[in-house]
Length: 308
Length: 129
Image (cartoon, rainbow over all chains, first blue to last red; front, side, top):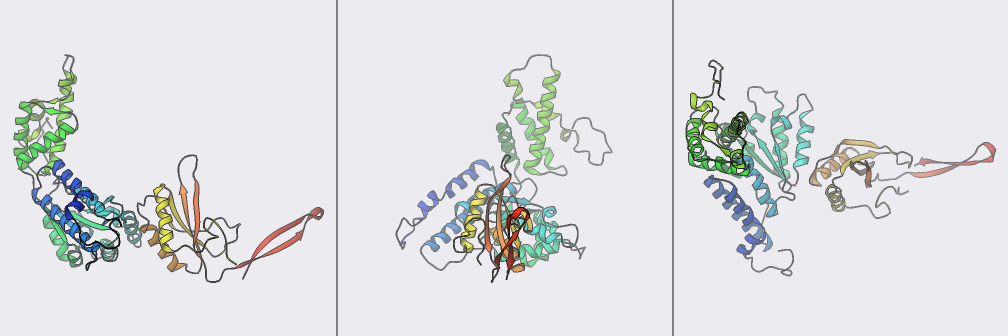
């Protein structure tokens, strides 16, 4: 599209654009690397199509204005919001809507200061870093604390709103958090709701998806589950889901980290020499030792459970 | 009198777009960007006032341009320059420095000649205007 067609384009081949801009690559990557999340992928595909068409309109000289690209990602913890934001930054960069395509991930602490006059420079510092890329505000609702009217979060919100409006060409803001609290946040700050065009909801993973996620996580680390381990993992997922502080893929990652710890202990305490196979296999015993099987997490510490 | 210090100072003043491109180059080399201003452009005045903090981890020139705009708002009738600092061990120095803003009327210099011991002659420069 960069001038190789002469002064004026008459037609735009959307399919060719789709291939050449690298959008297809990103979407394929998204499909390949992220398990489940069908509605999210669908929305991203739609957004990509919209942006491609917008770009084609611009190239043909049709009426065009920079679309509002700010987004909100809502969903429970561990449903892949940050990962998708990273892919989104790549996508927007390929389509030419952000210049650099980096992701700056922040929370309230990075934006809000501790005393009067501290917030504005802090927020601006973050915004300066995010220019040309995507600013990802995790748990954005913490910015707004209705019970404290002197909270400095309000100041950060005002600066953010201003930049979201005036620097639409320079950066894209993605706000993320739990669905219900984000809804309340948007209700209390209508400015945000009207400036955010794309609301994407992240569903919880199903048991089957979590099992696949655990397998792929282990594979990336060079481990594998044996048959008993696989069945134990499925039981684990089913039980873990009903226990408190369940965080989807993040819970699975933590469970696997602990399973690897137990596997290492098991191998270390055995006398026999180990081979590569043994070093990279997680067995049933490593997973069944979890306290999830013995009645759940002991949050208040009233019961002592030896197994973790 | 037009002050000539740093890069590009014999060229016409850089436009904002050219400044942005220069800053993009600076960032592409991973140098830190600092904005400084002064109303005293004497060549011996090496250390100008710093505007805000040096910017170490920007990805895009827009952030620098925002700061520059702020600085111009506050010190529009001063000299403003952009410095690029390379923190690589062994360099640790300013790699590039150029003036991006000048006052409406720039001061000139007057040279003083002074006789010193043993009929030595010394010169010194003074800002005037």
